[in-house]
Length: 521
Ligand SMILES: Nc1ncnc2c1ncn2[C@@H]1O[C@H](COP(=O)(O)OP(=O)(O)OP(=O)(O)O)[C@@H](O)[C@H]1O
Image (cartoon, rainbow, N blue to C red; front, top):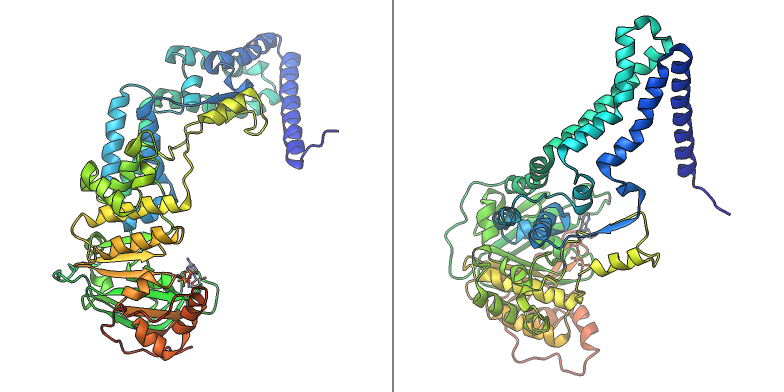
């Protein structure tokens, strides 16, 4: 038994009413006008005229793809701009729009006169323009006849003919609109598709830009200060602030680790320190200057952010890494060196095309009127078009880490922020990554968020321990263990799983910080 959905029934009813209406329209004409057979004859031409202009593409099942590399590259570049998942990369890790626009132009030029429309659109409009116009006009002849008889022989026109004229007018307008789209073809497509990519350069920031330069760089990184900060996410429905009366100072060049349970506010602190958001009250300062007064572009150029949420661009692995420093995107030596530090070298060498491998090309494949799952020959062909290479979460993090090392080659980075960059790495991979990051610490302040105690807390000049949106403890590992509070509790939970002693003579014991009590609201 076949069951129809409510939507299908409503659609079928609508179509039936429309057919009855058309038949009534024709019957009225035939009854009141002796020449009405001309209308009927012209009306019958319409379906043939439509097939002439569009082919019978929409009556069949089909799959389509593009093997034209420049067309495919244009789609990939466009998808980086259009996809919100890359927003963080684009805004926080340096402005790569100039490169994207330049590469898009290059690919467009190499594509020459070829259309930028998707393959089915090209197929449907593959007829010569004249043929399209003729077929459209043929399809509208019955309507022209209506106008003609109503205007030249008003006495022959009945009330029903006149009543249906506006409808006929609408149809004509609609057909002419379709015709205009055909006329615009390539240029219009280019404009519609390229505009978003060009507009990106003028994208406004969600936070207001400041106009002061960042105070003179020191060789020791960037000093940061958070004073009595409260923060609630815009539109947050909960009564609790994500951060409550948080205060701390980070000296230039320090390695800082933020720890605390889930939802305690660690990532939120990083978002304020990188000016993804402005605090609701209190003050965030860099080099003694309110962060809101600093020029955003300058600040972003001096900051590198590595999180667990980075995405692979639908571009080559070389570009994926190279775009950490867009000015050196073609520098093979810097790219392979960054891949080595990010521990991505080994897995990249597994691919036949090495650094030219595109892991996740933008799909330009389409499937019409058959399901991907139905096992038909067409669906199998469609499945064969999918060129995505699956990589593990850890391998993805290695590419992201390599991109960050590439970013450090700009020589401008004074603040490096890493939010659980090793969550998907195996212990060996994590240890190597942290070693490599710490080797870059000269001239930089580094802030890490981690749930794993060990490598980082060992090297930290300052540990900030968060709980329920409050900073509950701060100091070195030694200081905090001595407090036997929240930090030591979290540490002991992990340490219990190992046989190693928690006492480590290599612990870096440097500056001790004044713990700022968390006043709970
Ligand atoms: N975009 C957001 N909108 C609204 N609330 C948010 C948003 N991001 C985080 N929060 C809330 O803010 C609080 C702090 O979140 P945050 O991500 O800073 O915690 P975290 O310590 O980094 O947690 P985790 O260890 O799980 O990553 C949480 O209660 C969280 O639900």
